[in-house]
Length: 129
Figure 1 (tube, one colour):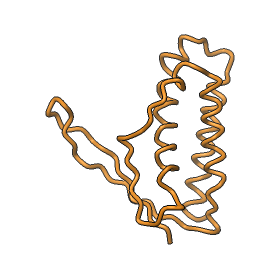
Figure 2: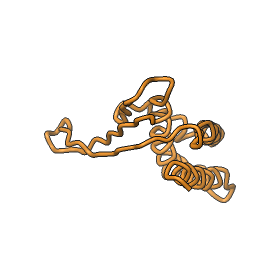
Figure 3: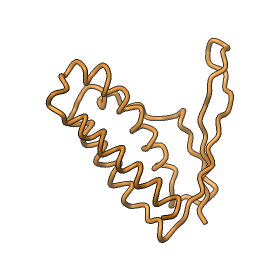
Figure 4: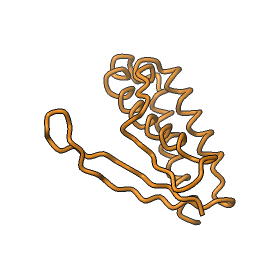
């Protein structure tokens, strides 16, 4: 199994677990809105940023995770969160590792926050081969 196939399988598995958690009727609404929803939104925003930077653009590509959409409906609305997870899963399925291999280099860049304290900004360069 090549690296991309492994990453896609792991991502799919994790997102399917998130979907089960979102749809679990034992999780009450307040807990969803205060704990699960905000974390789900954060994760899905990152997947959306990555997907937006993928082809048809030409490589090398840069993914800016700091300029995410941060759609707060995901935090409040289970149905909306479910739809977003399913859309991200479909986007992952469209990446065909047998047709294209991707090298992802992730790094952390120091960035100043408004308070002058250093913050970490994630950046990934994606290169089609």
